[in-house]
Image 1 (cartoon, rainbow, N blue to C red):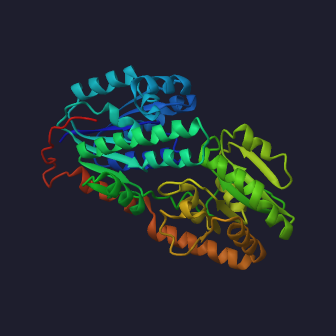
Image 2: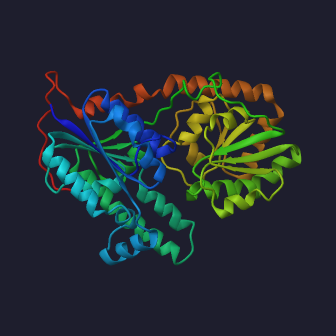
Length: 407
């Protein structure tokens, strides 16, 4: 029985942000059943130092530094008529590492995590190829285009168009295309006509994200409204800015002691500046997000642009916190009415004010949210479909994979 090559656009350890959390849990699930060789990029020096954390899950691991600047990636994209999302991750050393590993190892399955890594699947391979798109990135850039002015509008629309063409080509050549939600998968089917599109949802570690777990509590004053996320990621920046400038003033009229806490690494200058306003705190990176979720009177996820399943919402639900999420942020989650959804200033402010005004009902809503996550989003159950996709037969021999040409 051959091994698995796992290609990832970002080293999955430590699993401290949304994409890395999914990648790590998929890697761990596969490693419990097969020998896995990991080849990934790192864009944070700490990920290079944390390489030892992957030893237990991998037969071999190659983590390459990705230092290409955005301006260089854009210039290459314009010159080569390719999406910048791909040129940003195009690396000669990575091509060599992948080719060498495929030459030396018996690889039956190539698991590609994130569309940027599909360019490393060789032109011809007899290995089964599983493409984990997670979300439909081309639509994210289309959303960016709608919200931008020229020339960024043109650049974002160009990226959306070229990336969509690439996604469609890849889907036609792989054995399965994976997405994190039914809505995202159905959208991809309709837009690309791809046949083997399947859903492998995100999960949550409900033992770690548990209000009864052992972690350091924090002392707070006021009623905390908490947002968590990577704070140099455009949808997160736009979400907290919109909430702080348009929604929070309506809340503080009713609840003057309400404090909006923005929790997450690498806050941009625009995010940091929000802390100059009354009732707003920006923490920057924290070692553990659980104390802030635990202290929250409610958690908000007012994203205008969101694809797939939002880990930040699942984490808050698992911590038994009442959640107010935008339609896009809630769409991929089967929450069964255990979170509140709103998109307008009035809808969001009314929902938050209601939770802050009735701590008893808010606590009950949080408990129901945790129960829902426990019943619906354990990682083992969510990743179980991977076993059938990998296709190991009863004798441990995978079905013969077809030859293919990579996109």
